[in-house]
Length: 119
Image (cartoon, rainbow, N blue to C red; front, side, top):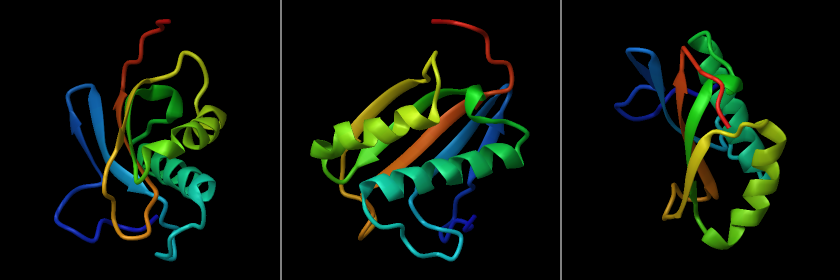
């Protein structure tokens, strides 16, 4: 997974929570994945990698924020997102924003070292 090219951490722990910085659709070789679906899958794979470095997995994610270059892509992103997370889904917000040139989606997350069952 590519390391951040700017002065920030991929993730920081605070108590029982891990705050994961926004993950873009960059492949390990530093190139950006193709279309929205590919970028979403790669961003989620990057999220998995960061979580794994901290002993966590996608089932530990309690909140996601999704940033889209075009909010019109919400449904397409959501279709891929549902492939990645299972019920009960993390809480989530989604926004249309200006992203890194060429990027179509960015996903950040908060994970818990003590996830409790809820609906």
